[in-house]
Structures are given as C-alpha cells and as structure tokens.
Image (cartoon, rainbow, N blue to C red; front, side, top):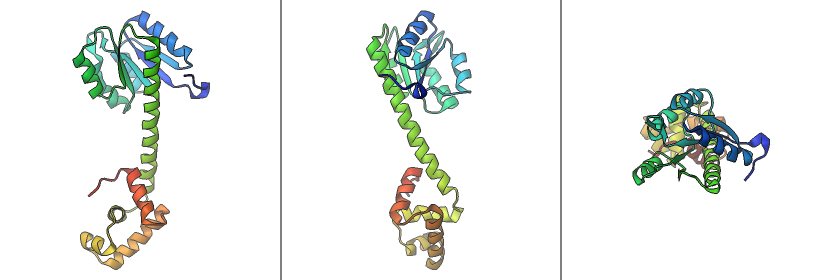
Length: 209
C-alpha cells in the first residue's frame, strides 16, 4: 500500500544490526514510507525528545537492553506511539509481554516482507486513529476551558441528565442560580440542547459521577 508523498508516514527502524536496518529500510521505502534508522536505545530516546514517528519498528534486543524495558521511557518521551517488535529468538513470554505493552504486532526474524509491511501499515493506521481521537478530545477540552469552575460543575451535572432542582441541591445553591449558570454554559459552548452537552462531555472524556 503506497501513500502520497505529502502524506508519507515516517517509520523508525531501531536495530543494532546494520544489515537488518538497511534491508528493512529498503523494503519500507519501496512502499513510499519515509524511514529513519537508529542503532541504539540512547539514540532512540534522544530523537524521541525532538520528534515522533508514525511507527516504531523495534528489535527486541538492543545491545544488552530489551526493547520491552524501553516502552515506559518511549511513552514518557513521546506519549502513545504505535510499536512493532521484531526478534530472532522470540518466545511466548516476550510476545505476550509485548502485546501487554500495547504492541501492534510481534514479528519473528527473518521477517516475511509482506508480513512486515502489513504490520507497519496497521501500526500507522492505528496511530492516526489515536491522533484523531486525541484531536477531538483536545478540541472539546479547549471549549470547556472557557467555563468557570462552577459552570464546569453545572455542565457535568447537566450532561448526566440531572434536572435543575437536583443540581441546585447537589451544589448547595438555588434553582434560579442554576438556571443562570446553565444558560451561560449553553451560550459559551454554543449548545442548542442537552444532547449537545452530552456529546461534548463524551468527547472531552468527562468521567461519570
């Protein structure tokens, strides 16, 4: 599957074997993917502090470090990044642990070209879905940032379907005051109905009470 040049995802190939890096990079570039090859954990973490790839293709063992140990550091540097692991000596325990760490796939070397490309493309697609979801959540959070602390309390309770009387009792105020707050919330958020508030609450990831 090829991508238009301006949309080409970037895949980072992290392996301490140069021959593997060269071969994998050649394969990925043949599918119109941009590739950066890295040889060490230190190099990987340093680059992650500056930019984020669409997919990380990691050898299970990098020098004396297992890539599974790097996952918390990777997430700490770059947040949620789609991971695909490769290994020449895979075992069931490592595979299970990789999946628990959120790996999209775990491939055994020598890796079949089709399987590798398929895993990378699935990872790229998953990463785009994650970014789209984060974008929706961030946009909703920006909308809610216009509310005062009390208006956010009213918003959350209205979105849960509570009537004004119950909200007033919960917040220790009058029903008339809640009506005023509710009107301001609707106006600030450009909401036409409670349904709009519920949708915004879902997008913002407000916890149920």
